[in-house]
Amino acid sequence: MEKILLDTDIGGDIDDAICLAYLLKEPQCDLIGITTVCGEPEKRAAVADAVCRTVGKEIPIVAGLDSTMQPVPVYPTPDGAEALKFWKHSTFEKGDAPAFLYQKIKENPHEVVLIGIGNMTNIATMFCTYPDAADLLKGLYVMNGYFGKEPLPDPYYNWNSWADPLASKIVFSTRTAIHRAVLFTDSLK
Picture 1 (cartoon, one colour):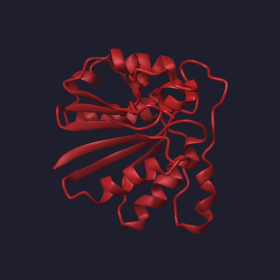
Picture 2 (cartoon, one colour):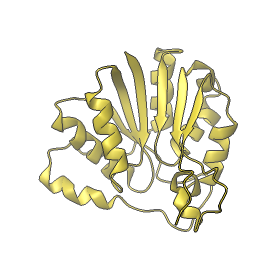
Picture 3 (cartoon, helix red, strand yellow):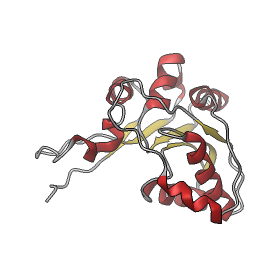
Picture 4 (tube, one colour):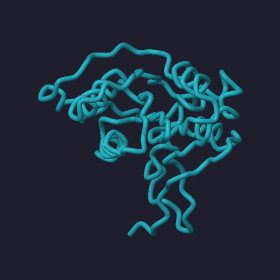
C-alpha cells in the first residue's frame, strides 16, 4: 500500500479529476491528503471533496496557495466548480498547504509519494520553508515540463510550468530519492 499525497489544480480540465478518481479506487493507494493550488483553491478543494464523496471517502483536504512565486499574466479560476451545485461537498477556507504536506511527510518519513499535477507553488514553497521535506519523501512525481524537440506553439501548452516558472525551477532543482516527471513530448500538429 503506497501512502500518497496529491497536490492538484482540479476544477478546470478533466485530467485532475480522473487522476483523483483513479487514486480513490486504486486498492494499493492510501491517499492520506489532498492540497489544491492555483486560482480560487477553496473552490478547487470543494471539487476534490465532491469527487471523494462520490466514492464514500473522507480525505483530508487543504485549500492551498492562490498566488505564484513568479507573477504570470493569467491565473485562471476553476470553471468546473460550476458543477458543484449538483454535488454534495464541503466548503473550504484557505489553509497552509505547504505546512500540511510537510506534516504528513514528517509523520510518515520515507513512506510518502507526493504527486503534483498542478503548478508547483505549494510544493516549491514547502521545499523552501521545510528544507528537510525532500529527504523525507519516498518519491516525487510531477506532471510538469516539456522536453520535446519542437518548440511549443505557446508557452501555456506546458501549463503547470508556465503558471509558476520559478516554482517549477525550485522543484526540479530539489533532490529527492525518486523524482519523476510525466510530460508531453509528442509533436504538436
